[in-house]
Image (cartoon, rainbow over all chains, first blue to last red; front, side, top):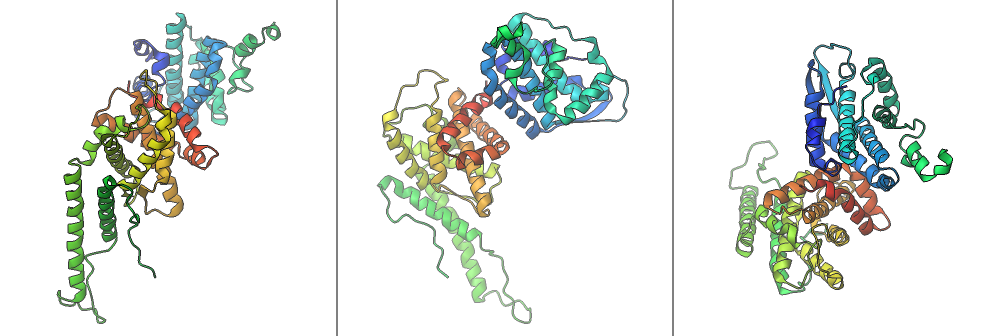
Length: 198
Length: 265
């Protein structure tokens, strides 16, 4: 799994605020696309209206759930990045065409999906590092084409499944049943009702 | 069939608004003339072209001349009374709204509010591809005076850059939308929707600029264009807000949500 933007995003001293700026979001997303696409991808197009729609939908979700940052800040960062990923899948702003399909990496199997994941994962990892000095290890199966094929089919049916998928990559407990309901995340439930978590 | 006349107000409430009425009337005449095809050729029953001095040819020539005069008249009015062109008028947009400043009864403030909003509406209507919009200054002026009266007891000191009065921006947006400052030629339902988008974008641009330190003409134009683009994406939400129970409160919430992410860092 290539995460070409992490170093660049780390150059932003306050990424958790910068990412809420539409101009920064657009610019960094486009840059990630350029860097993350495989060599065989000769043409890519980002639909600006769709990209902005993704951002606006994510912003609404973020504002309505941000109070949960007080319950478990680390979990909320993962959830927010997952919500952004879900909106990117829902609005699908990127289209990539390749002359030849080579390799069996995630970006070859599904260039658009891997570009979205690469971006949101990069944002989450950078914010976690800036806020908690955490360096998450991306699991080996993130490079398994079969995982990507399965993810592609699932997210086509329900874009919100991107949230638990990203949780898995970040080592956070996923909620596959009601992925978009932040209050039902394992970490939030545990902190809100500690006795039930035991 | 009754004659369609440009809607002049029966009285002008104060003398300062008189030039605006004249200018709006000239705009109305110009648009009316624009709807008539001037290059028509008169042909007889047999299809042959009649000599150029026919009554219709003369009427067409007269129409063309009148159109030129009306256009010149508006230019003169604009140059003599304001000495500004549309984009130059935008320089006053950010600081003449109700979002950041306590308004006192100042003619300068009033002039800036009216002229900059006229220019902004023109830019927004064009950006949103409105067909042949008629924008009038006198309704903006009337709205300004009504809003000033409404807000006179709510004046307050602005303490910090983030201390923006989104409520007053939303209230003025809803008031302006109902003022009749913008007349569109699209079919009714389409015009209603477009009208709301234009004014919602006007308020969003004002909110964005109120949060920003960049108030140049370029920054104002960029804020207007971005606000219009974003409002198109929020079209259904904007429609629901204007049709909803409390459009002023809902629009204020919308500006609180959208303005910070659109503000230039």
